[in-house]
Length: 68
Image (tube, rainbow, N blue to C red; front, side, top):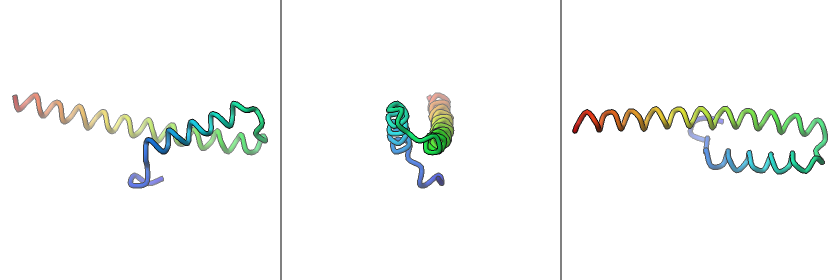
C-alpha cells in the first residue's frame, strides 16, 4: 500500500472486518493466518500514519506559537 493509496479510514474499516471474522471462530487455520498477517500490516501502517500526522500537527503548532 503506497502513501497515496493508504487511507486510514479504509484501513480501520478493514481491521474491524477482520476482527469480526476472527471473532466468529469459523475461519480456517490458513485463512486465519492470512487475516492476522494482514491485520498486523494494517496496524503498522495506521501507527505510522498517526505518528506522521502527530509530528506534522506539532510542527504546525510550534510554528504558530513562534509567530505569536
